[in-house]
Length: 304
Ligand code: PLP
Ligand code: CA
Image 1: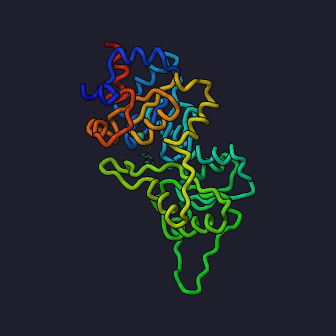
Image 2 (image 1 turned 60 degrees about the vertical axis):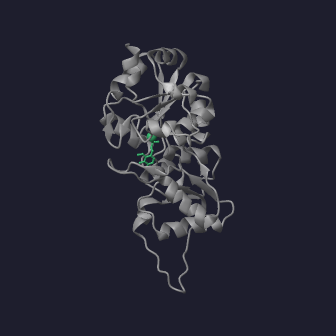
Image 3 (image 1 turned 90 degrees about the vertical axis):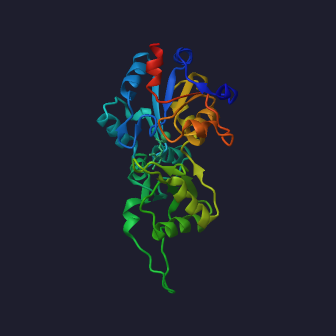
């Protein structure tokens, strides 16, 4: 079939049997796989329960930096899903862990263009964060004699989705980076758009990151998917080989690429941003090993 020629195929009962046999850990993207916004996707809870009862390791990897791991744990619990914080890898957590593994000095500060989730993770890791939502109401006076002051002890700027981005934050982050060549520029993720509401896509973190690229002429270090940082980090934590892992996601350029870059099997679900025509379009070169309509197909097919 055309699908098979593309190098991917709809998930079959035999594929599921093989997957369950050869995979010890499933990595799940969250939005579009587990939930859509704040609504759990049909059949997810039972499917996760089934995988757990089979002894599979479950890990949740989200590019959404607006929450911290503990905020995500609350969200999972409110949706009736049992998880522990250490099974959750958010791009907010990844930003803090990147600084930690690179021995970022505790006496330096981190300027945040983004949400509470990033500040929360920085604080938990022992770093001092500045900016974030607090700077959302600040304005600038563009008068001839105005001099914008910034804290010279900032050694890193972290940029994620920020619905309250403004000219104050742009100038702050820009000065930190431009006036200190050693300042790190970290992007939680570069998703072009995201489902901030049920009915529409909105500019994603990639938009805020691009603003700082534009003013600084620097490229960021990306810590979220598809970067390998989170994968390396979680591999250290869980003693599983990538050849026995399967990444399940709804985005080709973040989730599927993330899994492929690490040598995991990949399963695309069509319950999020990607539909079959995008997958099969000749302009798409990212091919998952399998695709299926939604996560719960795993449970449905195992019974067939
Ligand atoms: N970033 C933001 C701000 C989002 O709202 C979303 C999805 O809703 C994402 C990223 C993508 O999250 P995930 O990686 O869980 O699909
Ligand atoms: Ca997703």
